[in-house]
Length: 451
Ligand code: NAD
Image (cartoon, rainbow, N blue to C red; front, side, top):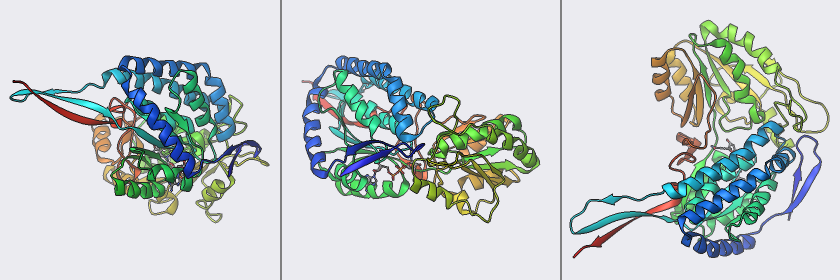
């Protein structure tokens, strides 16, 4: 079977890639296990040096990687450059983690008690199409640093950067088989990784539905699993906030990556006294986002990933309900969809489910309690923002909203050196941050009796 990779901005075929079968996965696991033994036996300093060299090779190919992302995922080139740079930075940071992965010495009678971090073995990293490069590196960089081999399963629509990154790992001198890309379908290649007894851990980023099924399969084998799943994050604007800045930055928080962002703040909660003012300011801010050719550096928003996904997004915006704000989108070829802002209530389907497109719903609220109640009225809990000048409120609300990543007076969610992950059905476990490498190791306790 061949996977056809389309440019979402033009619908042209960019490449066809053979899909890995369960037999291919089995052979890859064996190659990876072999490579992992040698890799884990290297002196930590040598492992770190090779990862830094890999970061250097990625750095030398940033533009090439970014342009691949533009062509296969339709990301604006400015974002794609950031994504390629994120891979380099993660490798560099994970290389530092090799030397920081220290054990402990615990006081005991009659001897010495110490802990070690043992690599898990072969790790499967299953990646979605929305941020193919960074999400892959969030898994493979710390996993390699901890002494594991990695099998990378990119999404069906976006396999090209994964294939190129695996080639660059070889060019940097990483052992053959240590980082392999296995493009293929979820039910075949992805499932084969999940079921394979030679794969010790699955890092899955994708939809909550598939994540639940993978977790159930991992449970049968007590296989380690990290899940980074969907989101329906709130952007809460209190009346005492800098409403101008909150409105000016709101479009970026739900239109970046055409809304195909697990951290998208697609529910905008606005306190009643500033509701009308916020809407007045939001309209020109949404319209100022340049939609068009992803290869043009001026572009702020590209197309959706596929025709099927566009139909799904469209199903959340009923023809009968006029949008409060509707942006422009190119006609003709490409999976374009305009920025859309609806006014509604927390009970609406569009306010409860992850749309994963450039669609936000604005909901008024009376007071802090109601804002927190609406923000938490979802099965998800990934990220969110709140805008206020009151420090006490900022801390109170940050603690009360059940989400893994919150920003006060900003929309930032992801820094590779801070932990990232979801509450509730947005996921399980944390990636990135100071503990990322340790998440790919088992702690072993050793007691040495002293005569
Ligand atoms: P998806 O769940 O359809 O697919 C994700 C990956 O899983 C793909 O590689 C797919 O081939 C594979 N897969 C599908 N079925 C499988 C199976 N049965 N066994 C093993 N693998 C299987 O998700 P998607 O549509 O590619 O991505 C969008 C979703 O990802 C959204 O819900 C988004 O919120 C989420 N996401 C979450 C984060 C996060 O960090 N929390 C980051 C990015 C995306």
